[in-house]
Length: 227
Image (tube, rainbow, N blue to C red; front, side, top):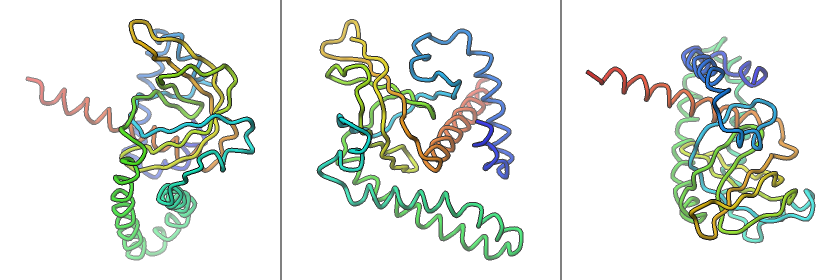
């Protein structure tokens, strides 16, 4: 995570919370389930999350962009908006150092665009169905499905991470498929992400960081409210 943290050290409060999360996870690591090793073999940090998910089988990674015959224009729009926002962050930091008023105005514009994106995402998530519970990291994710998937099967994964909303089209490979006991026609699937672009990895890292910081703030608020 060191490369990902370098881009976000300007937010000192969030970074401090992230270090606290890191310390907590490192302490907890030995007691974690060995099933997590399927998801993450490079010590990426994992979070439990809820997101909109669709997947399609692939014969090769070259088919990724054509995997969904019914492409959602709003999905592509929101994906492009987040990529542009990511690519412009270093420019905004440079402007902030020279002209704080201009930087503040641009942040307001970004906020307005985010609000529009959230409104569009509400309709998009309706199209993709209810959010599902997953475990996700920069290395891969796990989820449940009503059909078994063969090991090494390539998948196209269409995700909407909330509440951003962050839309991502990723390639994955099945590395675990296990029937869930006491559940009819339900399998636990773990996939590793394949050929993740740097921008996608950075945006996914930021989402995970923000979720971790949010959980810490919620935990602190709960502790402070306990008599």
